Amino acid sequence: MHFCLILQTFLWVVNHDDEFEYAFDELGAAGVMTDYPSKLQEFLKRRQLSSHAEKELLVASENRYTQ
Image (cartoon, rainbow, N blue to C red; front, side, top):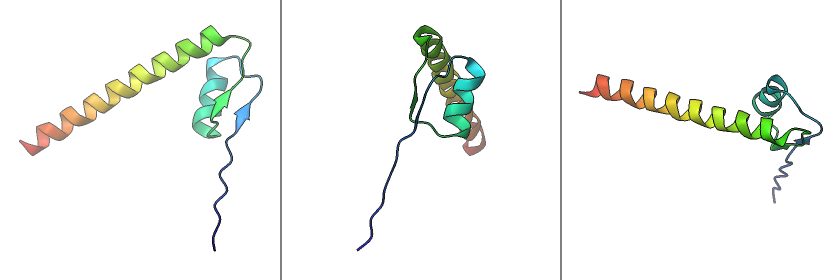
């Protein structure tokens, strides 16, 4: 019998964009605690928008090569 243990990591106190980015991208944090929730919210919005734009560019470039 095999067991898989998955631990989610949450970091205290992350307050700046570069720290948010490091926590999520480099450390793989599931979440962060911050003194500035509005800064974190804006960071996550920008990140979602840029991720969406990157996906659209990828789809557009794939469509260009398949036509």
